[in-house]
Length: 219
Image (cartoon, rainbow, N blue to C red):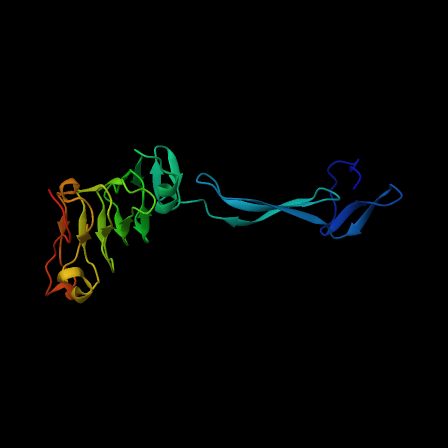
């Protein structure tokens, strides 16, 4: 459309100033809108801006909530723990800033610091991408899970420090050797460390099982 030479014009509701084929500007019914979506960030809401291509009339709607961080690497925020793991580089520390529910897969030499937050799910430390995974998981409260809190295959080593595992709903009959907690099978025994980590049997399904660490480990 031709540029509106009149600038801001106060029109009746629903009226649009539209350029005709003869170059004249006419007041017509209705606007022709183009819509642009602005995504939410960690600092601002998202919204959609609708702008009339003829007269420039504009309105905003469809507000969405700001993003809520779950984990951080340095000052960078992430909406999920898995997204932070995917972005992490070797040697990075991921810090939880909110409680987390959901399983994650770790295949990098990184540290996850729960900072005392609750985690419901399984952290699976996997060697399919990196057979020399050296992982540290600390300060995490594993609660209300229905499987192992931490599970590994043949990785190089893992350190589990100052964590708690409690209130799991998994039945003893579904656990290896009738026990529940951390499954560290397949990792090198001398390189595994579990310290200051309490595994408690509080759920009724555990009443006939021992709350201990499963698999090979030292520490």
